Length: 432
Image (tube, rainbow, N blue to C red; front, side):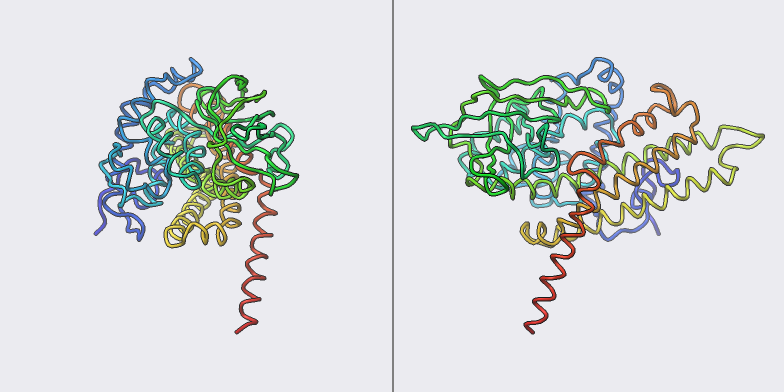
């Protein structure tokens, strides 16, 4: 016997396990998390999202409320919460040892459904992992207390005006002072999400020669010589996309993350989670669009029939539904594999696969957004009313296809990584 449905009962508006069907991946703590995040977002976020968009920003007080609610710790850590963070609040009362990649998936699924607050956390979810994975304990103990309490915010600064997906060729420099105590940073970063309100910038810099081996990761506090200006983007103002300029910014050498020359590898490992996280967002975006399009199709009459009675409309829903469910299944498979692999093996075996997943997520978004907009007709073009969420989703599609590696770059990466694994396996077999 199946358990009761949770949330919308419209086709493909919720993951299949929300509808009560069995799943090998989700247990009681995942359901508890889902319920808690949805309730919190419905109370604290959804009623105010339109107001925040109109104002161009989310009030700073909301971020502090997020910290109190226990959202920041899991967002900063991803698929595994360090046990030493157990004294911080964690939403739904979940213990660090319980937390896994499926909790991470559920958390983002509900945050995206909940509205505008999700944009507050992008800097944290991509900026904190390098500090957690690669920095020494002294740095972690210095910065995480103020980050996880909501007192300070962090973002990731990798992309540059002339080196978008080509991370190997970044030009922002960090040169040691003659006394060896500081780096002097000069350069520019562009399209930095949450940069306008961030206090710390997890920054890819060039400390050595050309290419990947000359790149390091440096935690740069907002200080003299660091300037930020807003960069309007297609998705709207809440993500606070930023152009960052470094002009003789003085940074203690102790703020180096790991070792010099390791920045490119650190960035690539970080990209794997970022690309998976893009898929999390894409799936819920598609489900929201399908929900609203179905509601409309069930009541809108045209040519003496409700839209849902028209075969051409049902065809659109069928193709959208099959793609979303396939994307969900592939995402869950990758999350499961990451749960059962070391971080090193996960990066080695699944880097290319995750790149292709991110591409697929963008392609599914393109299809679902366009078809749902067509079903809505004129309502799908308006920023208010019944078509508002579909209009916003349609407008946001480039944010799934460009950031974290553009579509064409990642398609090529996926094939190259697959061939690399093939050659390694072939070599291993020849030794048997």
